[in-house]
Image (cartoon, rainbow, N blue to C red; front, side, top):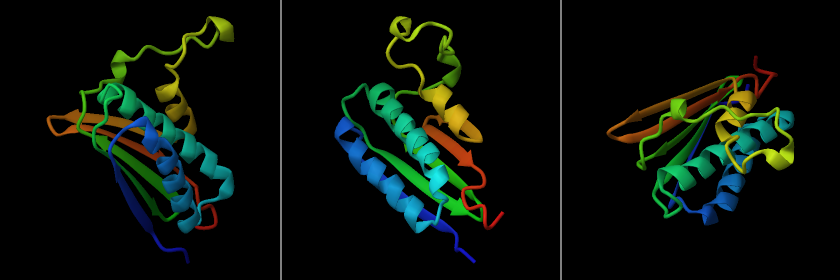
Length: 144
């Protein structure tokens, strides 16, 4: 039986944090015995979420945020929380994937990718800040 797992990383919220975040996710996946085939999805979803916090919540100027990874049974839950500018995902237009690559604007795929890679994506915002919760089911299939 594999035990439940929880790990949290707090950082200053600058682009320089991205390698540290990637290492944190990789280490958490290893410690939690997450199926190697599932790790890329978690890694990319967390990276996209953190880039959005750095660029949009804090305008690239830095600001504290946390990433928490919890694995309970066969499922992983990732929470990214910040105290930056309020964020409403309804304000983000859907990307136009029918355009040729050279005609597409740079960026704008973060939420789309998170929603494709994860099973559940939920945004919450309040006076305390923004919180993103993502769930990926079956990351430890031997348990499910």
